[in-house]
Image: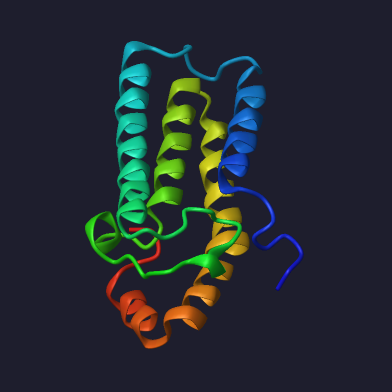
Length: 153
């Protein structure tokens, strides 16, 4: 395992990237500041992202398993229903959509690099290590689930 694997809470990574996007967007705008369209699209995406992430948390709570991303080894069950039937990582997908919403709101095209950076970081240092743990805990059930359901969408 690499040093950064499972070290930082994913929301901290999302907030950090969002802050970098905000600082970068303080540069002179490339297109006019947030118009009604940017704001509306951003709000719609934000609502979708939050709904996806919350549905995942609710599914974990119902299954009485951990939502702590730093201790995947404490998982007690493999959740594969609800939103987890569509994506293996709905909480991270929700964060990614939230960062896309933030980039739209900022109306600064280079801010779109933030969600890309988040997806690359979270895949390498959180999702892949979590999947190793899930495979060790749930074996063939996790392998079958991984074949049926994509990592992101």
